[in-house]
Image (cartoon, rainbow, N blue to C red; front, side, top):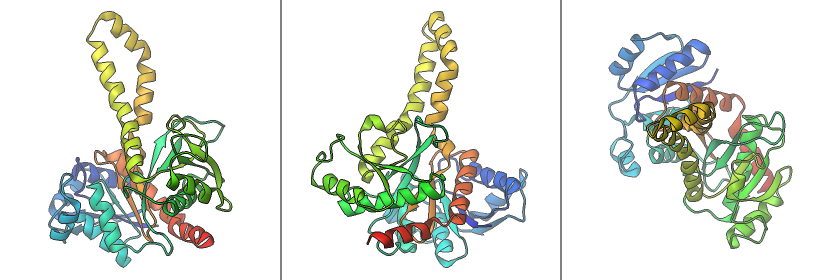
Length: 338
């Protein structure tokens, strides 16, 4: 089984929820895990619950990077930060992948510092699953969006490589035989979006063995038209945060309406199951984590507000991606189109 390095100190609810999630995985699977952080605190939390000590070890480190810290400066001054130690363990072969719910910038920069890019890959991408409708029986209810924050701006070649990486990940992890890949744009026509997107459209269309459905617009994101949606990091991050906000809006509307009048309370009671479904679909904390694709090693970035179930899912996703050989799959696909 893969060995996963887990940043125990990263995230809004660390280390309690991180340790709890790791403990749950140890009772459900054979995945080997290393918790990285303050050893005494971690061990105390482990001892306060049930876990399999044969599957969990602890690596002590003296510092952690806060969610609000400048990632570049924090990594420079905190050499022993838990997220940096996790990346070094993976790079040295002590672990097969890493999971962190900590500072996103620090997570991506730690991977960039200690991992090598797959030959031919120009930029890594942070890929995130998102809930959407399905168009046919058996279609995965989760789509894949990349990039959502590892980059700001991209050129056409980089967007085409994101399409290749997303296609490989969906095929291996989501088990979609021929993922439908779309390019996020302001219109369906291939001439829309300016020079970069026009060129990216042409390049993606010419990639062999890739099911390209063309440009997709914002209203297509929540449908099942595309299994993989490609965009640059700035726009992708805005889209992801917008989708994430749906869960909070649904909860706030329900709470406000319940205090207005008995008629509102009655109406909200009748709609409660639907509202709960919208909340659960849009709650990204339940989906585990977002893979950083493009490196020779795997990093899974969990949501900053991850609770134990989300950490558990992120670890399982990391182990599955290692077993399914995501990095070699991407490397082979990139090599064929260089």
